[in-house]
Image (cartoon, rainbow, N blue to C red; front, side, top):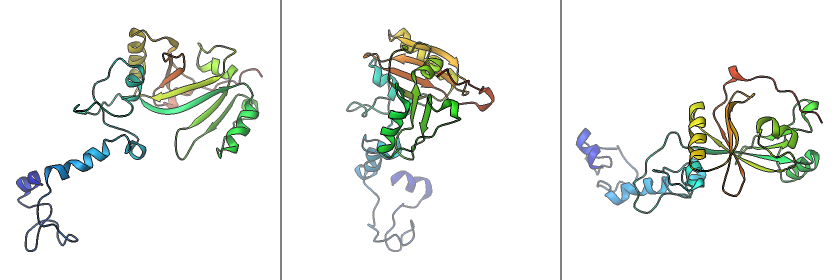
Length: 228
């Protein structure tokens, strides 16, 4: 590449008798062209590559709710120069609030998930699957959902879509920003018993969306199982 040659005095790919990468298999004997240098960047920043890199590089947010949260899912607009936003929320987890824990656990185990329970008093309130591929899935009872989300309607079941943020301050800032833009809050930011900063907002269709910081074990406290 021209910049490598300028900095080192050597080409990246050398021909016979020329300095560079020694004995490169079938050397082309020339520097790569600009469009060839761009190919790996285009591939790494494509929506398809996000399946393996788990991210796409994005720039400025718009007011659309999914773009505000997920880092502009599906890629940037044509011609937009892309940059990395360190505070961008990452889609990280799905919680299903369920009516019948045993029936729901049996269903998802039929699909190959290995759901783990805790102590016996928690068996009807919480099961978790730490997936080796894809997103983690937690099953929670309605009673337990109201413990970590004070705004959860007591007769409701459904999904809570979880996003991870890089810090406790980022959770507070994202919640405040979304509320200021007119979105509804279900749970204001608070220090959750598992050691993370946590909040819940609603998307335009009323789905619950969790915002969570990394957990700090030193701030975790013991949670009592809800009454069954």
